[in-house]
Image (cartoon, rainbow, N blue to C red):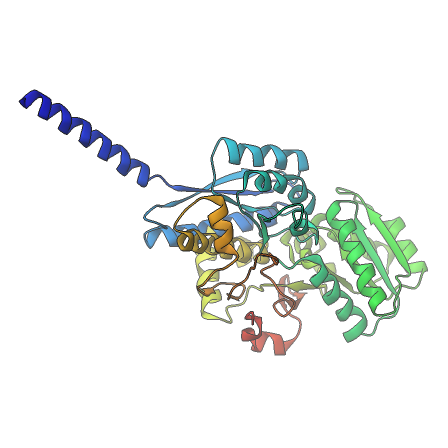
Length: 401
């Protein structure tokens, strides 16, 4: 009898220990982005911002009594690599959600696997307007792709308003790269210009890693362009700026948020001065949350010159962790459909770095960033600053209403 009792106690203890271990298993969240190559300032900054948020949440006890664990992968800004990573994170790592994607093409190619698996993905950098529109009713009852960045429809309107509305340029040229990002952005720019009754005097494109933009710039110059509107990423944007210097021709550059990337500012040097772009976050401690975030980032990573390589990416990555963590907490579960439903009906405000998130998503709207949130930034002295003092002095305008 004593032996039987002892055996039962051992079995019960083993079962309880196994259950306790299972309950303590970390909640795996994928994080995918370009950690090498020309897009790496975006991917690294996003990952590092996400790591800060994860550490804060874990220090406070985690979610549902479990720690969060980021499972990071470098997609190298390649569509095929993004697809491979998506399948690996879903089928091998069993992530409950994924954050990331800096490049529109990678996002478009990869997110379908999350839709099929019914696992939420928050796109926190890529801005192609189509990213969140691939899986809509009636073909898809529920969309598992969310976004926490200013999509191109918003940015294109801001770029055109800055160039044509505020600064009164009537002859504009568009220079964009040949990727999905560049070409979809160009289309949005042309639509925004048409709404103002303006047609670009030159529309030119170039490839990733091109180092000579002379031909494209000459066409813009000969067409009488007063301003260059851009849709590309840092290294090639620097070639545009430096190409104007070679031609002895200088007109303003106004483009998408990627003009804030460190590898544009550093590679273009003084030629980057004055470039303007829409920004959801500028590295200035003008709210308590931003001050805490900036100090924590600089302390943890000590970036050169005290400048976050891609401040927008870092802030959006940080906030995305809190969005997904709040959804898991509200759902009381890590099951994909329940987490998706919670994201669409978040019942607590989240005091983020970019904004105060108050019901940021609904079932039919997966865009957290609305048109009232971004401001216009300007490169000045090697840093991005507010182009307009009234926007710097009134950060509360960034709250979503």
